Length: 137
Ligand code: T46
Image 1 (spheres, rainbow, N blue to C red):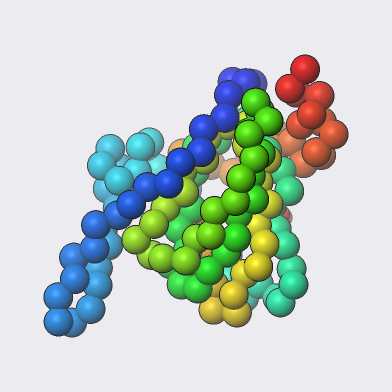
Image 2 (tube, rainbow, N blue to C red):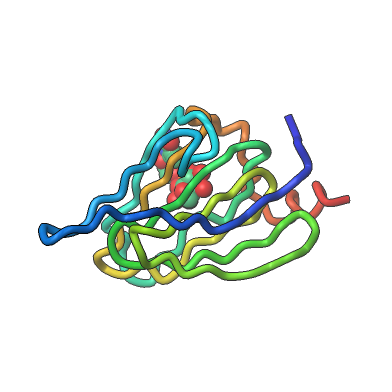
């Protein structure tokens, strides 16, 4: 199914800090704007390696660098491009639909947590930039 839209925005999470340290809680319909079906995390990314390079047709995700930092380059279906540095466990990046995403500059301690609204489905991916451009037309 093609929904032909792209949404990307940052989400700030409250941290329950005290003299023991910090705690962030993520709840459906509060911090996470969808029902969660899947959680995965990316870590031990080798120096100089980039990931992503695809679009999802309809997936909703929230990305959080729970450790370290990652640079996210994105391009929306309307041509809007930008970059977001994820470097705080209190900051999430919400991505929905047709957003070309590339993940660069993983720090050696980076752990990227991803919360998704659907189970894994390779059919939801567009892994060719050329096909993404065709999708725009
Ligand atoms: C995304 C970025 C941020 C699974 O078997 N189940 C899963 O849930 C996922 C996400 C991946 N896989 C398998 C498929 C591949 O054989 O794990 C392997 C690596 O996946 P991929 O090359 O898609 O990894 P990334 O880092 O390029 O992209 C991933 C997500 O796939 C994608 O949805 O937005 O992280």
